[in-house]
Length: 112
Length: 114
Image 1 (cartoon, each protein chain N blue to C red):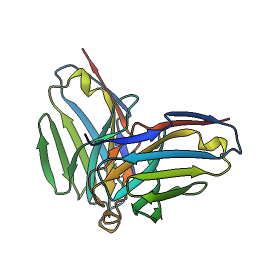
Image 2: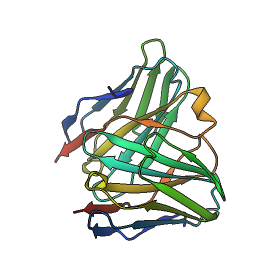
Image 3: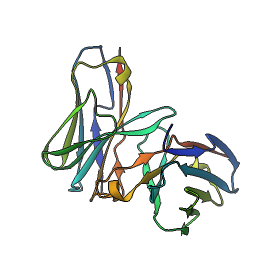
Image 4: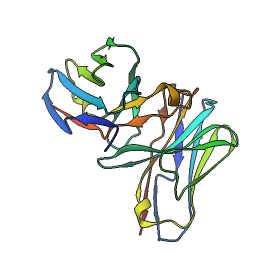
């Protein structure tokens, strides 16, 4: 069963705290993505990863960093979270570049 | 201004009716388009892609692309309550296609009334 998982599903942090969002996929997909979704803005690409330790900035990378040490696992890190990083974060994976993207269920992050 | 604009913002259609969603790009380089659907509380799921001018049909869903007018549409016939969701149009230009990058529109909220 092809699946993208995200942990945690809900997270509340205080401004200035560090945040770690985790994503896993069981499809051996090369390419993985992190997006954030805000009302009226659709999905915005934060980072894209083409394979282990091969990461590239998306459209809104400022304030975020990523780590991919295993093909099936992709992490999003917020160092010293800010209130404007309150959002729903989605991880996705695809078999290759430009192919259909499979999304996880999302993590709702609130930064107080 | 978003490079991919969707209209309408929201749409209500009676069950069994036809739903028509629109998407316009402001960037002539965008050549490849996807439609994604997101049910409440879930992640988006790909419905279909369209890369060539004309129609592409998959079951009750038909996408239409006109690259000259930078317009793509999605038509859902015989709408079902399960079609109620947020629909995203996403676009890519050939330069970014090989990088896997998509630009998403802001979404159209579709409600199917029983």
